[in-house]
Length: 413
Image (cartoon, rainbow, N blue to C red):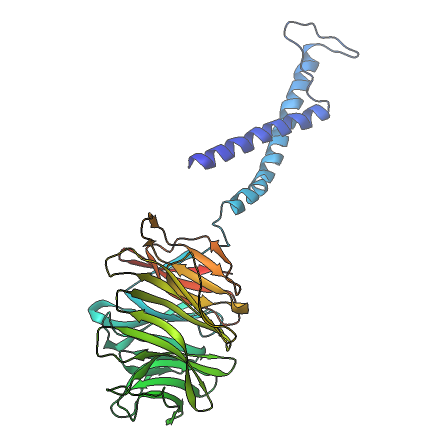
C-alpha cells in the first residue's frame, strides 16, 4: 500500500470513530462514570445497570462504526478526481515505432501517421475511432525523402512518398500512375473526387494539376522569367482556403542557396506573395509550419540561425492581403503547428538556445489571430515532429521526440 493511500485510510478511520462516538452520545448511550466515583442518579440500580449500559453502548457504537465505514468510500471520490492529469494539456497516448515523417486527420476520430520503420520501410498507422490498424507499404524511404498525407474523409486519403502518389479509398492503398517523366511532390485532397497534385518534371510537365478520376488537368506553374535552367520552380506544398488555391514553391538555384515562396493561383496565373523559407548567405532556417487560415492571411513559423553550428532562435513571418509581408515574434522555435477553429494555431515547440542566453526547453502553446500567445501544459521532449487537428474540432495530436523515442500526445482543446 502506498504512503498516500495509508494516510487517506487512517484519516477516514479517524473520522469514522469520531462520528460513531457522536452518534452514541446524541442517543444518550455513553453513560461513562468518572474513575473512583460512586454511581448515583435517579433509578440507579448499581453495577449491573452500568454494565448493561456499557454493553448496549459498545454494541450500538459498533453498529454505527460499520454503518459509517460503508459510506466512507463515497467520500474518497473527489480526491481521486483531483489527482488525475491536467485535462487542459497535452498528454501521452502511446509510443510510436519508427521515425515519424507526416501526420494528418481526415475526420473526427481519424488519424494517419507515416513513419520510416525497420529497413527503411514505410509504415502507416491508422487510428480509426478506438481501433489502431497498421499498413505496411511496399516501398522504402530515406530520412531525406518527402512524405505528405492529406484527406477529406475516412475513405479518401492521399499520400506523396519519395516521389510516388498513393490513394486510400477505405479498404486499401492503391498506387496512382503519374505522367511520364514526373515525380509527385505535393498533394491536397478536395472533398469529392478531385485532388490537387504537385508534379516535378521538365518544362512541359512541372506544375500543379487537378487529378479528376484518371484525367490530369494542368494549372501550370509560376513564370520562369529569365532563369537559365527552367523550370525555375517546383511545388512543395499546397493549400486551399476559402475556395482559393495556394502553393509553396521551391526555387531552382545553381548555388547552395535554397528558398521557397508562397504563390496564389487565380485567373489561371500564379502570383508571388512572399518568401516563406531561405537557406544560404549566412542564414540557416527550418520551416516548422506554413499555415493558411483564410485567403487573406498566411503565417510561417520555424527556427533560424546565423550558421549551421550556432544557437537557434524562433522565427515568424506573416502575410496579409492588406499589408503584405511582415515580421512577427513568437516565443517558440516551432517544430510543428496546425490550425484550430477561428484561425488560431496550436504550436509544438523544440528545444533551442538563443545567442547569449541559456537553453530554452520546448513547450506547447496557442497563438491567436492577433498574435497573442499562451502556453499549454505538456512536454514536447526535445522537439515536436508533426501535428494534426481533427477537422471541425479543436482536438489536436502531436508526435514528439525525446532522444530516440517518439511519443503520440493528445490535447482535447
